[in-house]
Image (cartoon, rainbow, N blue to C red; front, side, top):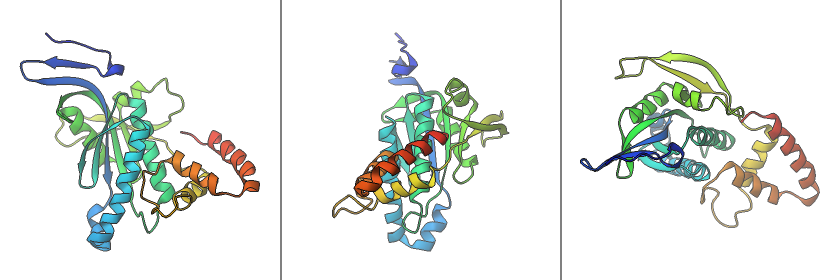
Length: 249
């Protein structure tokens, strides 16, 4: 007999005749822009080191937002979350950390798509149109852009801390009907917070390499503040807090 559970607690309908479950899920597809060109320019070894840093950043943000890594397809992650807000906040976190640490050691820009819906859960991954739509929406995004489906935006209409640009219609490959998507209006942290985050990835970690552990915005900022002098800490803490309050999520 089929059973239903609340979406916030992992809604699913089990079909014992097929051994499958259908769940409500929010998916994020994250794709590196110009991955092949970067690999060609850097060479295999250097490109592998860059991607290892990228993987750690993504996984750190996924853990912070209580998500799951479903698949890693070369340069693309498929991630799942229990709700749309967690999915979008994780996407913003990834973009911000990548933006704060971008440079010769991390010359990466990503495009992201977020979609919510019902999908078949089998083993450790999902199958169905919701998965395909998330990947297609990500493919339509520009570098550094996060696109969300109309369903995701509708689910977040009461979440006033998240902001979106104007909607537009897309024809996604393989789908008969157009899909309405919106761009998430995320921004890089103010200059002071970016400097603290960058400092946190290079100091206060002993002899371990800077990329030897997952780097999240919170970890980077905390480590950076510990590395500052005592006299500067109070002033910079107040300035960073004011800047964070003024910046949109």
